[in-house]
Length: 438
Image (cartoon, rainbow, N blue to C red; front, side, top):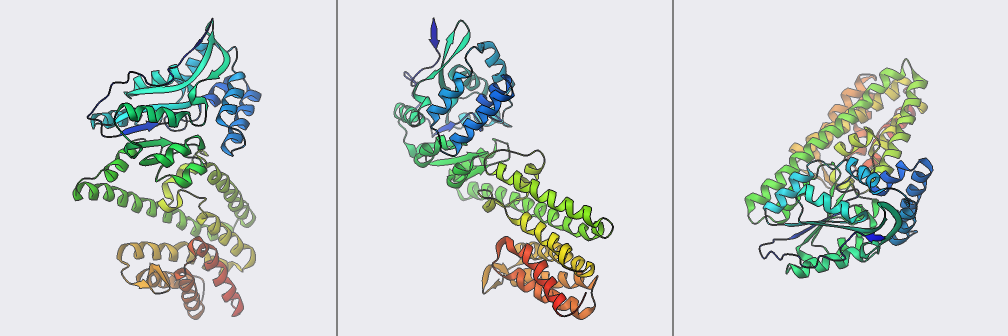
């Protein structure tokens, strides 16, 4: 006898007239670290895992539908015992502070529901109970004598399934889409993102990352509470407290970012003794970073490197590929390749320290905007000029050092975004070479 585990929709749901809003949480990629179907396919062997990963990739680039993905993947699970699937489910790591966050939301009057188009319903319901969510809904799977039949059916297997389910929950609790907060990660959730009052991308793939109002990449679900504090602020003090947290976090990110920037200053030291090794290390780091960024903007991580990037990038850079480290590494590498050791050392120190000085001074006391670039300040550019001169004077005579400082500070003041990391060392190096200093 074949049994299907699920309830189509939450019939008989208890209506709570005190509910503030509905919070919908995806499971795979949001609460789970990774996807259930990938974890289960790994148990079936390398080839099964690669096949499932390729199908997930085709889904993410919009080449196959969610229904086709689930049908083909679950067909490969035929014969897997329910106990084996349950063990895989139990061993999947959860995002930090999942239970505490959900409990806090419920204590403040939010209805929290877990919805998954990839995880079996019985596991989602079990997870909802463990995390103190109000309810959970997953896909229907066929079971025959405690073994998976490979069948997967139900509303959540289809692209509009989540939308229909959420509308049912909203109607039964006298809520609207404006009262809905969704936490999602992949393109299967784009429709509900557009309708929800607040949408939050958690370890989001690129398509979600581009449209999300907020992003959480810290692997800490408690950030949701800060977001809701700001969105639901009913007093100036509440709003200010929430925004102050973000401002403090922004400063910490900026400091970490500039500490990484300053690491470039060590390159001349190593290159003087290990020139080719230093170049190889720089180019290797550049390639690894580019791979890491491609993974990050699609919700995945490269151990250590992605964590460092997430801790250092600015909020405005979270949605796209961050070019700053690429242009910095290229600027340093090209300086080593095309300029004399003295010029290369001078311009690398200038880009490492002068740009850092400009940012820190500009953000803290920069009150007078540059007319042709209002995002930067006269105070910040003056700090860049001052620091650039002393960096250049370490290796160059007075006049070339002064000329390099003026030229580099002008480049720094231009609206070039991340390109200044490349143009400061290369442009300044070309100028010094042109005036005959080597």
